[in-house]
Image (cartoon, rainbow, N blue to C red; front, top):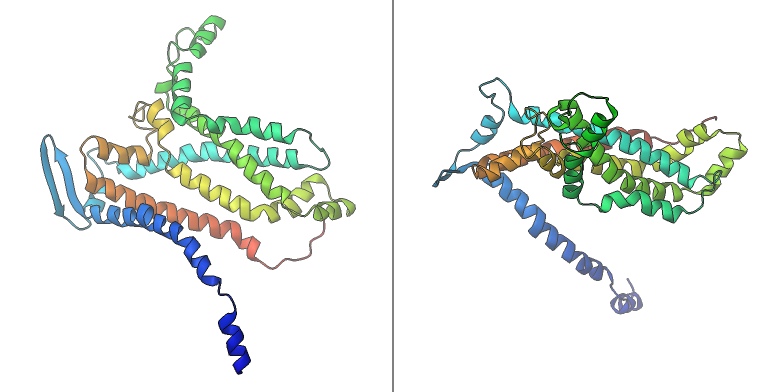
Length: 320
């Protein structure tokens, strides 16, 4: 390196350090608010630490004993965490599948240049409004509507369709449908807007080329829109899945925190909450949290790899 090059190198501004400085707040917040609590949760899961009446038992190091107890069957032969995880998956699928399908249809409908729908901003606002309602308020509304003395039962009795009030909140299928319906209503607007943004980011010339080649709307969707929308769709499915696994507020309020009937609507986080509010069993609560984290991470990897496999393949010429 010549003398002139060394002088220019010393005088040239070095802006790379400012990039590192600007991302320090994010990493500081992540370490303090996320990483350290996660490590502490795993640490607490290795201890026996709970309250028995007014007596505090522990903390006492027990290793993986809390995890062994977590996966041990109870007196009825049921492994609680597996049952509640199954409930959670069922409730999530019942709400997430219609949510993604309807959101995709609405996103394609509103962004179609063939239809040229007017007033998109108005429709975006309308479909997003349920997302602004607190889950607790939504749950109380449905609890009131479908209670034995609620308006729904009064309408059914008045129309003569039933002889006595239907206890919707004590029927397994109706409780699950109500929980899934509430989650669908609260989140399909947010999903629609994300998918609309993804579709609007696709180059319009690709749709024009498909139209010139004689592709139908269905062929354009599956051969152009869906492949190019895959990154946004992966993000949407993974975030919806993580939110579904962490489902708590809606079933907690609707079922009075007991997952009625017979705990068929109790989720994993409700199960976790019982350890924190009843026995103050921080060791078992930590074990449930660690298992929940591992399951969420594993399912996220499975969804990501399965949805992105075709996206990563080299593009090939396809005929419409």
